[in-house]
Length: 318
Image (tube, rainbow, N blue to C red):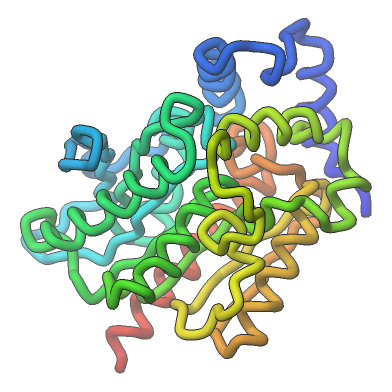
């Protein structure tokens, strides 16, 4: 593997910025620093037909949603990607992932609805999952009013959001719905035990460090069940992954989550699911948030959007 030169420059700039590591800050200060960094590397925001914020009821009050419509729907319902942002369950927001969602809406020719779930440590596990579950059910229930085709709904996310997306699919299977036609998992967290070789190999120097992962996990799983193999926290350790929506799993070569992502893709296939794997060997964790400075980030968002467009079109031909 060779680290992408543009990514190397991003890491070098971070090292020279003088900013403290996120894990040395309070959650509030870490969120503010992450938001500023996301704005720096995100680049120009693609223009869409409309972007609007709404809310749906959740277990602890309203849950914010951001609705991206890439073009004039001309009165026709559109396919939908429900998107759950990353950030280790502690940081991240609708704003930090606004630009990736815009790219996905344009490239996928679909509506995207991004979920503003509550964060740890204020709302530790399973609080974020409960918010996502409530949000997706409300979105599906209101599909017609939102201008969404109920039979063309995919779910996806990156990092912690990828975990929440695939765990939502597990929960939907157990509850008999909602029915998602696809899951798009961008370097998802799938193994709370962090026992894969890449966690040691890439523990330091590539943005998502061991100490930062410790900080995220300690906040999210504070007071959670002791079993690290709980499938709703570690879907890689689920006894049965059969009957899940077709999946796209994206991994990055310099990501400590790399091996658990590849293992999850392989287990999805072994349990009879349709699954595809996109691997970006020169990339680091979080690279899709960098389309303003990393060409491969734009390439990945285009590839993910193109695959969504194909999935929705294939369903139309059935």
